[in-house]
Image 1 (cartoon, rainbow, N blue to C red):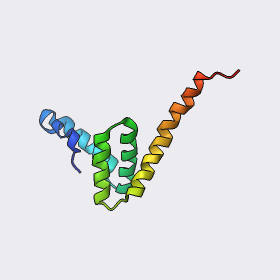
Image 2 (cartoon, one colour):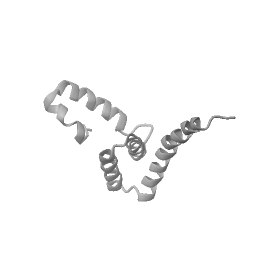
Image 3 (cartoon, one colour):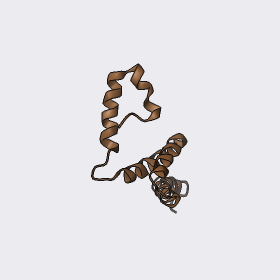
Image 4 (cartoon, rainbow, N blue to C red):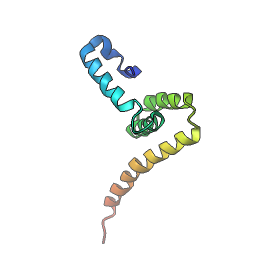
Length: 99
């Protein structure tokens, strides 16, 4: 597994570090206890939560080439919203202290 496109600059600017990052990337994203589709769905949700539209688009494209449906992608994105969006609602309660 090679570096994702947004990290390719490392290959020419810091080849030793690029190899280290590539090993970590490969370890994280190669099939293991979780299959690659599951790992990509998790990465999609995390990129969405971080506001990385480019990452979401890239990963969604990879998922679609593997046969992932729009419904599966939408469900993963709902989970991201639920996990990260609810923290905003929870902290918002501080605006209305208990009486």
